[in-house]
Image (cartoon, rainbow, N blue to C red; front, top):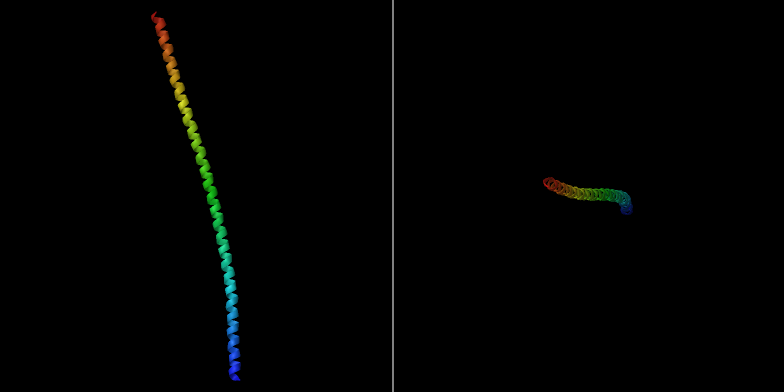
Length: 102
C-alpha cells in the first residue's frame, strides 16, 4: 500500500508540474504571438511611411524636372528673340547706311 500512496503522490507532483509548464507555455506563446503581431504592425507602418516619403520625393523630382525643362524652353526662346532682335537691328542699320550713302 505504501507503494500505491507513493506512486499517487509522485504522479500528483508530476501532474501539477506538467500543468504549470503547460500554463506557462500558453502564457509564453501568447506573449510571443502578441510580440510578433506588434512587430509586424510596426514594420507595416514603417513600410507605409517609407513608401509615402518616396512617393513625395518622386513627385517633387518630377515637378523640378518640369520646371527645369520649362526654364530651358524659355531660355531658348529668349535667345531666339535676341537673335531676331540683333538680326533686325543689323537689317535696319544696313538700310540706314544704304540710305545715307545715296
